[in-house]
Length: 498
Image: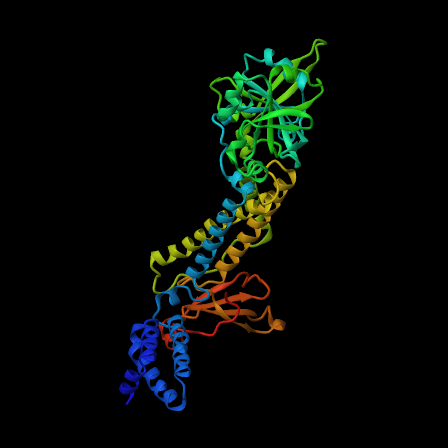
């Protein structure tokens, strides 16, 4: 009868066969027989083929439920709530997600990548205030002009640029306010950046200042049209010729620059001598390491005999500040951790059957794995928070990274220790079913606290309510094989697990 029904309803037969593929192999035949029997009753009570087909589609939900709750399924046994594999997988997902977000955010991506400049360790920024000078220019134009000849024995190249806000006519009736850097013509040469071809071609033309655009401005206002190269635009009344486009992520110096205007020495000398800007220099090869170059200073004597001291900060050192903050906060968090949470994991007596060495090693390996995954999670998360919308040289971004990295490490390490204390030393599952034992009024006469149990039956964990001289920390008690009949490895109702 049932076989005749199946042949008379080919669509229902195909649906059940496809759904059966999701059922565990051991239960597939029995499951298919039960659904065929149910289909016979539905066919007897329904008048339309559509109702029978809709009933058969419900087999997919039933098959998927059996697949997810199959006690013989390896993924279910490994990634059940409270298992160490589930914990490790969750931490790994957090780490990968933080890394992907970092690559999607331009600011965070720059904070991770090294500088794109060749010999970045020998490139220095001359300033009066060390690292803090990157937030505002400190060098006057007249000082730069004096150094061009007086520092030839120190530097092979010296360049000057001044960030400013200017209105650019990007179209016939369209203007835009941008951050423009007025710079000497050798700025790209000092940084070892490729000079646009159109900029070199202008050497054979009558003089006109060259304009190099950033990728963002080129796409937004000039629609990425290469035919605009060589066109003349107006910047606050000054005519400049578009020379090319800066490669993306090539500019990693102080100032969020949208365009660069390159002037020759004659026009730069015509600017007011009090004009303040940034000075970049390429240090001559002296056999010093980049770290030694970063600690350099330059002393200039005036005609009156007084001396002015200037810091020569390596660009490589500036670019390493985000990583330095990360390492420093990791060190501070390790120092502060013992003051915020106890480090001992409890008392674990030697098992009567002598646990294998690999099992004891696995417990410490799991703790080390959690700590190893916490480090990249905090690193990428702090970069995401700090540089999502702020530039690398922003004091606010550096402060956000410092605070988020320190507290991230502190609370993550606290969680790692607390999680480790709540796990079985044999199977590493989270302990379940907390129960109150004893009376608070008899705390000094008998044991009083919380008792947790391993779902597999490996043992019990006793956590004292109030530490005393005879019971100051949690203790683990192994259960022998006679208790195994009371436990089921497939399921034990849990409370407070994740």
